[in-house]
Structure formats: structure tokens, C-alpha cells
Image 1 (cartoon, rainbow, N blue to C red):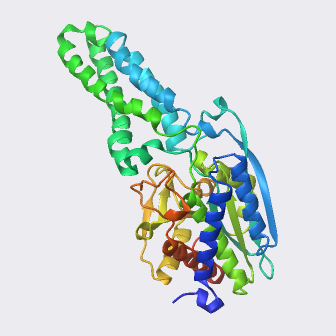
Image 2: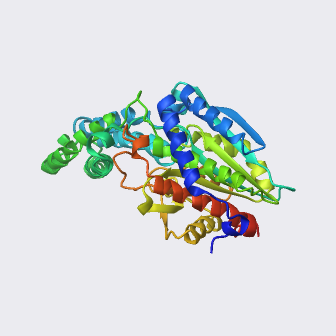
Length: 424
């Protein structure tokens, strides 16, 4: 049974879906792509704030600094180290080849997989923003639920557009990473064999193992084209429309707030916060900045955070269990809140994990603030993902309607019963 029905019979989800589609179309047509830390990202947030002023008592836009190219800017360095290691191993020393491989992995792991601000200082600085809207309860604030979606759009992933997301993963990205692992293993093998034969030397200088190392050299060379192709992984200048990823997430949360207002629902003691973050595509920079700046207030009152990220592929709608390349585990009570809200609305969704990448929820979970992610996107990923095909024409209104209905249900459930481990 839907808890939302106990609050009002006037929820009009068709009307809210039309609001979402119209809003996304307007921003894509009038503002266009919104790369992290850009004037276009800020303009979109100003439009969001103008909308939310109609339904919320407090709205504001907070700024923070970032280095947007730090997140992916390591790619040329990593490719150079990986390719060079093959020839250094053969002509110079396996020890130096191993060093190059390790250097190649360090920014890949810390920046791309773990979203650390590892090499950001090497790149130009920009100013980005978070839009925050707060709908106050009737009485004292005793608990809080936060929805967050990101307002920026990614630089185009060229390979996804040219050959498709799944194909890019299978035939370029995975082979390139496997190649770097193989090259590292071969370098380590060279170190061990060299040490066992009187010292560390280039592969060609160990006669009895020369044939084996010729084979190793050839195998290593096979992966070089895949590694070089990584240089074309994304555009460094052109960002995408980002209709589904992630204007849909922003507008699903905003529509849920709007639905409460239009149904004359104001919670007694539950504060509802909607955040449209900036620079998520640059490594969760907006959510990290917000969670850091507001950590104490988020912990002073029982708070649950739900990150909303892409509502397009209804068939693969899921609640996120693990995040940030599988390195963080989200809060059990908040996950169950969203999962049960889906069930109450008639959707049987699974718990999934993000094993490569992350969503805004990770920034809160890392700081001990109960959070989870909620999205409806094919994890393959689909060809529209981070490409020019992510347009208003590609939206799925049925998926958007489901997202709004579920979020209204989750808000009402949290107000009535809280969430295990958050309000207990």
C-alpha cells in the first residue's frame, strides 16, 4: 500500500512528468551542454533556483573551486607510461619498465576509480556551484531527507558515440587496462629472472630467456593500439546535452518537491532538501564540496541522502548498494527506504553496485552520512551515455513518471516511519 495516499489523493504524476520533460527540453535548447564549472552549468542552476522558489522557503547557490580536467587529464600520461614500458623493458631494464607501469596506474586508480583529487593541482582552476532548495516542515525540524542530482554534463565520450558504450568497454577500455596489467606482470617477470641471473638487465641481454622475452615483447605490443586508442576516449572541449544524465535526476527530485506543494502536503517535522550539484562529472566535486561544508549540520539532525542519477531505462532501474568503483557501501536503512518505495509503487527493483565510477551519494557515505543512489540506466552502458545522443528526444516519460512517483513515496515514507539506522 502506498504511504503517499495517506497524505493526499491529489498527487498528479502526469502533470509532474510534463513539467520534467518541458524543463529538460527548455534547458537543452536554451542553454545547451553544461560542462563542469561552466557558465552554462550556473545558468541551469539559476533556472532551477527560480523554479524552486515557488515551492521552497529557502534557496541559495553556493560556489566552490575545482580543476575539472584533473579527473580525466591523466589519460595521456598513463598511455605514455604504459606504451613506453614495453620498449623500456626490452631495451633498457625491466625495473624501469615496472616503475613506468606503476606510474601509469597511480592516477588511473586514484582519480578515475577512487575519485581522489590526486592530480588536480596540475590543471587550471574553475568555479562551480551547488543549488540548494529547502522546503521547511510545519514545526521543528527533527529529521531531514536530501535529494541530489547533478546539473553538469560530461565531455563527450567519443568512443561510446562511435562504436557504442558496450563495444567501447569490451574492445577498447578493458583490453587497454588488461594490457597495462600484462605489461606490468612481464616487467616483474623480467626483474625476477634478471635477479636470478646475476643482476637486473634488459630482456635482450639474458640469452637463455631471449626467445621467451621475444614472445613477451610481441604480446605487449599487441595491447599498444588499445592503449593509444584511450587518447581518444573523450573530447577535451565538447560536452553533451545531458538530458537524461542528469537533467532527469535534477528534475525528478524537483518534481517530487513540486508534487508535495501542489498536493498541499507539508510534513510536520521533516525538512526536504533538493540539491542540484555542480561538477559531478569531474569526479563528484560538487557533492564532495557540499558534504564537506555542511557535514556537521547533516549529522546534527537525522539525515538521509538519495542521489538521483539518470531516469531513462526503466527496465534496469536500481538502488545502489556499493559505489565509487565498489569501494564504499551505502547505508542499509536508506537503501531499504528507496527499495520499499519502489515496491509500494509496483516496481520490483534490484540492488546494484557501481564497480567503475560513482554517483553523488558516495560523497556523503564517505563522510558517514546515510546515503544511497537511485537510477534507471542500462549499465552496459547505452550509446547515448555521455554522447551527443543524450537529447530531449531520447527521454522516456514513463521512466521519469516512475522516478517522480517513487521519490514522492520515499519522502512520505521517511516522514511517517523514518529509516532504519537513521531515525532509530
